[in-house]
Image: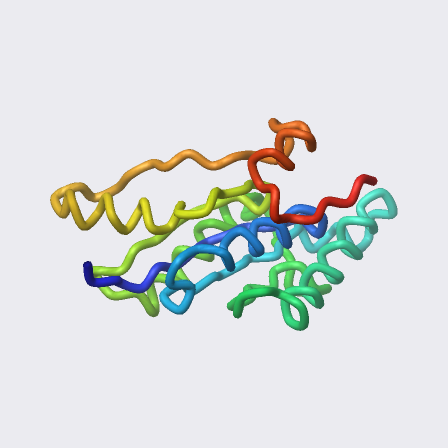
Length: 172
């Protein structure tokens, strides 16, 4: 089976404790050389001036530093969180972050490439990307598919340990 490039779009805001787990899951997929991961770290720009939102700004800065220096996969970072680069006006939120990610991916992707959209607080099982590639290969007429993934806030930590036994978890 030919392997097209696989672009993974992940919007993230205040996701320092969850995105590293998703990227670890992605790094354990088959054929990671075909993966092109793009993360949009984002927030409204006015968060910098709101004392109650300072923790979001700090967490986003730490996340971007982690992505640049410690990510288990190469990541193309879209910085819409640094001071002066955040969202302004009515253009903000996860939907706007996805729009920016999709625009960025469309500049590079070819018609045969695949786009996977995930949330930063989700987990995927081994074989997740392969199952998507296989389904498109077996069903070339379909334009889109949906494959289940797990939101960490819907699965208790003990279940994550059962689903993902090779990962190390830290309890807060």
